[in-house]
Image (tube, rainbow, N blue to C red; front, side, top):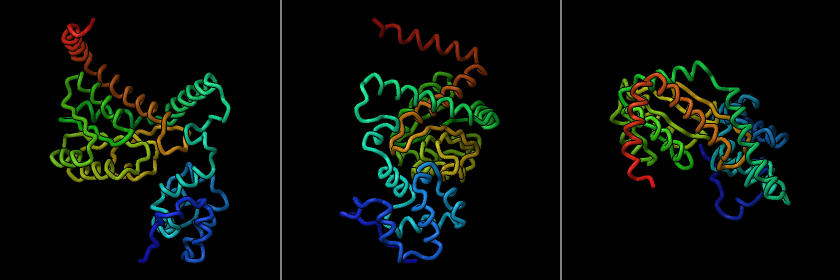
Amino acid sequence: MYLVQPDSGADKFINSLTRIRSRYPALAASETRVADWIMQQPEKIIRLSMAQVAQACGVSDTTVLRFCRNAGFQGYTDLKLSIARDLTSPTQVIHDDIEDGDPPAAIARKVFLSNIQALYDTLEVLDEGALSQAISLLDNANSILIIGVGTSGPIVQSMYNMFMRLGLNCKAQTDSYLQLMEVALLGPGDVVVGVSQSGTSMDPVLTLKQAKANGAATICITGNAQSPITQYADVTLLSVAREARIEAIASRLAQMSIADALYVVVALNHIDTALQNERQIWDALLPKMF
């Protein structure tokens, strides 16, 4: 099927809804249903997954994706971020709650409160069954591979630093090619943990897909319960943050807290080993302390 290619010139600076209207006559009937829904309530799309928009419009996920491409966007994420940029003020691109003219103390307070709210919201949706299942998988894994790209990298590295201290056979990988190379050698009894706030980044999705195909258990930590990465996850741990920016801030703290909780419970399950390893680590580090 012929798809209109996204424009790369001046068209990308056109308001998102104007772009949709300009392509409207060329859309198929099912795609116009998506266009009508978005133009009537564009603010809703910012917090909805592609599957949720498809359900609201009474069409398939494929139709929503086809609409995005035919309307001149690279995909659903591009459409959503474009609309978010159009609907937010310039300061909200940096942080949702900031207003022009806010003094530094007020900005700091809003940032702190936003982070605190993300932690409360994530705690509210924390699935105890999923948490217990993830702990059991990590506890009994032959090996653990933690993967993520971009801004998920620090979370991946932090999880590795924690689980390594317990003496677990654990690796961290943030290179997209090396992720696939390492996961290709895993199988039943191994566990792969994928961290992706959007859940739509291609590399973590492909890595978890390969892990599942090889028979390894899979866990994902994501901010989108309907995202592609969850299709290949045996366990999904959801973080929540009220952010419209492409680079989330508060959500990273929420995801880090999920990782911390996993570590603490696994450490308590192996308390003697955890304490012994901590003593050995501190003995090794003491000569480096002033």
